[in-house]
Image 1 (cartoon, rainbow, N blue to C red):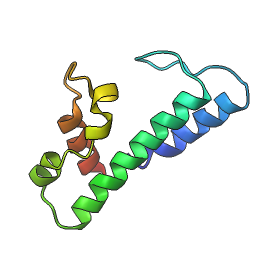
Image 2: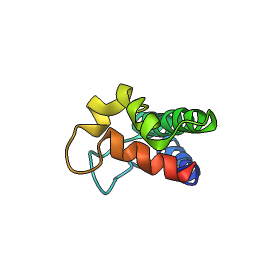
Image 3: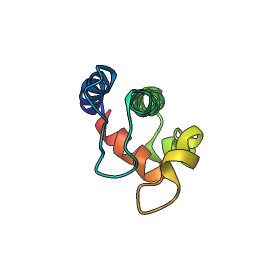
Image 4: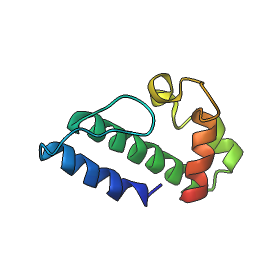
Length: 95
């Protein structure tokens, strides 16, 4: 997760410099505002999971804490296999 954030920041710079839109592999085309929101969402979830892990919580306890809850309606949507619980497990493995 932490390795992705610098790349996202670079894409945000490209969008803010007026060099064009960001065209993701999935989802709508975005610009600077969307990149900032996406990066901040990932950073917040990473920080929440890392804090819980640092407090000695198990993976199951962290999943139960719903670190992604504030973002699930927009980003999780329950479609496919990447819901909030699955994403939390991915973040947990990377922090």
